Length: 164
Image 1: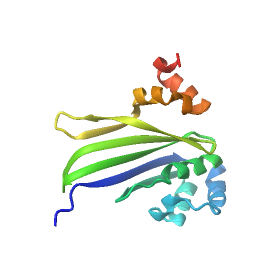
Image 2: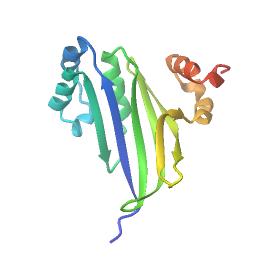
Image 3: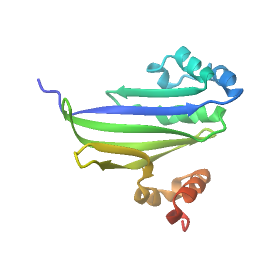
């Protein structure tokens, strides 16, 4: 039986952890039940944090709706704005992808925003996901619903949004 098309859901997070946060963050996360611990065991995550960098790369058969909330929880304990990537890649055959959708999740102080990304293509037909290519048309359309800290960052990054 042919199981195609199928969608692979890919998640990426790369968080540098500095100074005392290397010891404090694992303690703070003891009371948290992060969804990412399904793919990255808690003790491995803690060891990575103590080493100064939490990396999370996972592929799932189903979407992980808790991914943005996981970033929001991490952001409550860290000073930096956190960024993660979610990619939905549709396969029509074993090595043939016909559609890719991508989002960037940005989290700060317990809040998160999910922004669609523009997915490009190479001349060979491969899909390119650039975490810095936000879909500004969608951002403009949803502008009123975003928090002020997100407005400030996007205005700095994209001068065309300063008029909003």
